[in-house]
Image 1 (tube, rainbow, N blue to C red):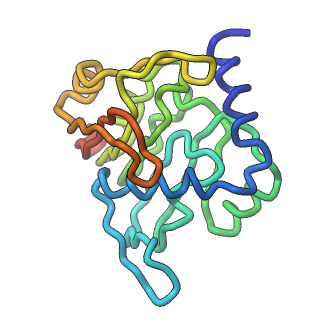
Image 2 (cartoon, one colour; image 1 turned 45 degrees about the vertical axis):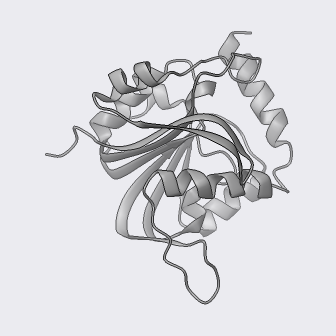
Length: 198
C-alpha cells in the first residue's frame, strides 16, 4: 500500500463507527472561529452558522462536517473515505451532497462561493494540488491546518507556514494552542481570495 492508502486506512479506523464525535466537533468550533465563521445562535443552539444562501465546498470533512451546523447553505463535501450508511443518510437529510473521491481529482469547473479546509491536508497525497484546485473553484477559501508536525502512519504530510503561504499566494496566521477545546499544537489559519471570481 502507498503512504496515502495506509493513512486512509488509519483514518477510517480512527473514525470507527462515527457514533461519538463530540471531541472532534468541539475542536471544529475553534477551527470555525479562526476561519472567520460567525455564529448566529437561535433558541435551539449557540453553534449555528447562517451562510445566507452561499454554496460551500468542504474538503475532507469526514463524518461531522461543519456544514451540519449551517443553515441557508448549499453544501457539498469531497472526501475519499467510506462512512457508515447512517452518516450518509444524515448528510442527505441535511441537503448536503457527499462526493466520495480525492480532492486532487475534483472537478475544477464546478464553482463555489466558499471552500473550507480544516484538519485535512496532513492526510492527502498532494496538498499543493488541492489548494490550486480550490483556488480555481472558490471565491473564498477558509483554512485551519496543523503545521510543523512529525509525519506518522495517519498523517504522512508535514505542513509548514512557508509552504502554505506559497500555495495560497498570501500570508496566513500562526498560533500555538495549548488545549482550547482539545486543540493542541501549532496551527495555520486564514481566509484567502480564490481565483474563481469571474
